[in-house]
Amino acid sequence: MCGIVAYVGYREAFPLILKGLKRLEYRGYDSSGVALLEGDKLNIYKKKGKVSDLESELAGKHLTATIGIGHTRWATHGEPNDVNAHPHYSNNRRLSIIHNGIIENYASIKQNLVKKGHVFLSDTDTEVLVHFIEDIQNETGDTLESAVKLALKEVFGAYAIVVMSADHPGQLIAARKGSPLVIGVGGDEFFFASDATPIVEYTKDVVYLDDYEVAVVKDGKLNIQNLDNTETIPYIQKLEMELETIEKGGYDHFMIKEIFEQPRSIADSMRGRLNAADAHLQLGGLNGYLDKLAAAERIVIVGCGTSWHAGLVAEYLFEELARINVEVEYASEFRYRNPVIRKNDIVIAISQSGETADTLAAIELAKSKGATIFGVCNVVGSSIARATHAGAYTHAGPEIGVASTKAFTAQVTVLTLIAIATAKRKGTINEEMYRQLLAELENVPQKVNEVFENASRIKEIAFIFTYARNFIYLGRGLNFPVALEGALKLKEISYIHAEGYPAAEMKHGPIALIDEDMPVVFLATKDSSYEKIVSNIQEVKARKGRVIAIVTEGDTLIPGMVDFVIEVPKVHEILTPLLSVIPLQLLSYYIAVMRGRNVDQPRNLAKSVTVE
Ligand code: M6R
Image (cartoon, rainbow, N blue to C red; front, side, top):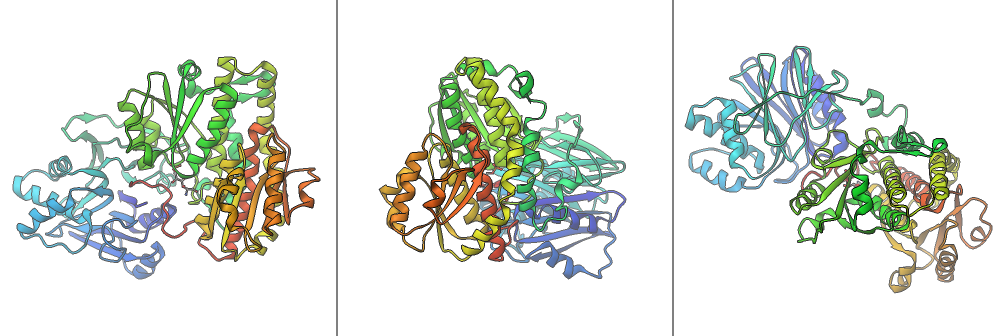
């Protein structure tokens, strides 16, 4: 969703902000803009469309300011156009603002300001906020910093903002509540951004702003206070991110780079945690919580999209290995119910970005009911990582493609580690099984590499089905969430309608859709439901459906029954999703590329959904 980049220091701000906005493009947006303090004038330049459109518009302009704010907007209030794009001016044009989030009570504030003579140019809630700040300054005669705080005390909703004033050269004021904001601390320069990707090139020293904190950079110094003026000492952390992890590195798209990174990202999610030779399994984040997990009567898993699918895989793992009852909930539904949380329940929140608004709200709700919350997040220092009591990072590295790929396999890997560790502590698996699972897990990265050997075959299949209008994905057991994930991947990047179902459910409705035009992807690996899946394949073939089957290598039965097969190596059944999902990611990617889609930034989608 929206992206923030701001800079104050000695460099030219415009090229730096533009580059930063490009780094944030993956978040999803529909317009962009910058405000620069040039002499004593705030000049705003903004444009509907891509950051490159803004760049072309400004090509040849002599923009030498060393302070500025920039934004990519994902429309909420008001259609995507030049006027609604950020930054916005205040009434007297001496202030400008960029904002991520939603000011829920903007309408009533706007009404009052209109009565006082304020003239609004856009339909946005953001413009109201900057007018409101100016109005408070006029009414109280207070400093800009106080006016910002007073305004923020009055607004409901979520925000990350940066405010720049023509009357205070060298000063930027930033604040957050519910939307992320990272401050990069360089020598004599400061960077503000929605995540660290625009910053890492310049400094690895960062401060993650907390909710209700206001950061002021003035006279080359950073000061952080809360809305009640209590000062906090900025806690500077070192970024572990490397620049090459946020660049395409020779690939056409981030998505394909990230798919091919999975042997490494899966290995990274186990690094330092698992050593099969010594039967060693330890997750630092579980320290002090493993007994709680082992004693849990119930685990409630919350997440959205792909993270929810990883939760469904975990349901099987915890039930099978640790014999714990698990419920997997869409965070967006959970947060608006009145869920029953018991004393010994554990809530696991799964999120790649760590910023998903619904998941954050679900965590807060579960917390308020006394639950212990465990987070499985990818982005270090993210809001969800900080809102949970304990957690384990997935260490997949930055995921830039909107379609989640390596984050899913890293989530499943970490959840598998947690389930095995819990089962061991509980005594629900024996030593032999424990050692076997650890050894098999260690081999997964190598096996993922073997799946890649089928990439050109998958490309051929993608070519045949490029213009299919629908797809059905079917799987049973651990392959059911994989079917859901395969369907989600296809629809989000190729815009082909796709449905995932438990294979046995087909007879209860979807079978009516089957004819010679319906491609059906079966997850048909050799596992405990193999015979059942074979019957389901026959039912589809009897109705002339065109079947693509993901099978275990060496399978001699299914290849004789279906139209296309893609083999994956044999693996312990528990670990199947880590391999069976890979061909589905590749199939979606190749189909989307062949259809000419914008694979990394599909229409209407945002990488992290920071509004509900
Ligand atoms: O960052 P999160 O894991 O919390 O994001 C959840 C979903 O928005 C995300 O998985 C989404 O469904 C992806 N686009 C799927 O590829």
